[in-house]
Amino acid sequence: MKKLLYFFYTKSAGLYINILSFVFPKKATQIAYSLFSEPRDGRLSKSSLPKVLQETYSETLQHNEHHFQSYTWKGNDNVILLVHGWESNAARWESILPYLQKSGSTIIAIDAPAHGLSSGKEFNIPQYAEFIHVLFQKYNPKHLIGHSLGAKTCLYYQSVYQNDDLEKMVILGSPSDFNIILNNYINLLSLNSIVTQGLEKHYLKNFNLKLEHFSGKLFASKIKTKGFIAHDTDDTIVLFEEGKKIASSWKNSVFVETTGLGHSLHDDVLYTKIARFLFETE
Image (cartoon, rainbow, N blue to C red):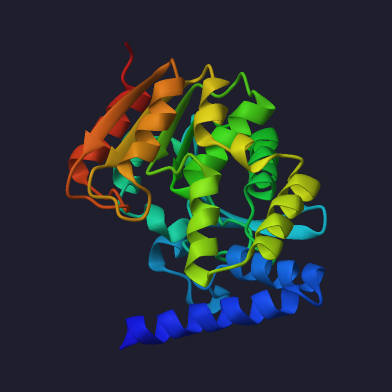
């Protein structure tokens, strides 16, 4: 029943946007973009934070007209930055924390735009990368770990900012081709060519990137930092081939294939491998 209702909702929304596009194409594109970029889940309340985040030093940082939230588990001078994905928040890292804390490191997790306690209604990777850069300027992390769209944001960040102080990156379940994500959305709503072209123009105008260039594989090809890429063969959210694309262009990386973990990639064996990659000397 839920699937049927979701089908009617998406197709009805698409039909409304398509009809509107013949009269007000810019308005139709704006609505389509809002539906695509506004998360429906992942928000947090200050009064009822998950326990794992209550145990941190919580900090609200300002960047331009937005603010974003960070959470710090204090340790030594080695800093690790954790970057979550779509419709999630900083609490998603609870399971991996014990493996990282064994090193004594200081660990910082961030809430993405429009997620957790961060401001805004829209999630986009360039803005998320700007938040990351603010934390890099303040805390100078040596290690960067990202999951899903957070992982792709990490790839984008390092390809653009080329931070020489960053020593190692861990990329978990990252998508590569943005066209795949956008086309899935377009097909879901059955959007017409007017709206489709409007969305493409929006990304070019606001992010100065053609959609085919907004690629994790392309970002990875520009990264010299050591990388650890993990992707699950049973991932139904981001297909396994996406991880392989990223690995194929990132020369200084290792690719770990898992099975049965799905998109979340929560697993003690995998966490042990990640800790080994980050902390063991070669």
